[in-house]
Image (cartoon, rainbow, N blue to C red; front, side):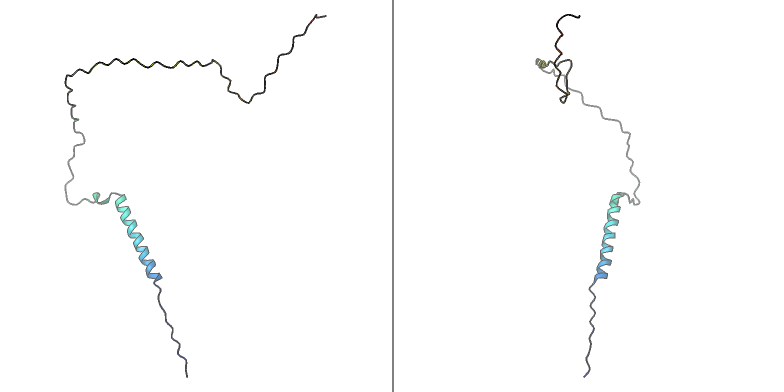
Length: 109
């Protein structure tokens, strides 16, 4: 009796999945670039350009009614009195001061 060998080749779909993934990434990239560089407003059809006047005169401010404001006298707050010495020693790592030498007593002979 002869043995029959059956070879079953199943395509796992890696190639088609990769192609679909690349197409999807390219589609997303094209849509992103389309909106980044102007989007649908950049594509102008047959409509005439708008006639917007960018040098329009400014509107005048409405005049204020003649109502006098109430007078409020509030004394200004007094500033705090801070006394700062003229010379500040900021050297905290200095050597301790030497005691002055005792004066010599007696005569100079």
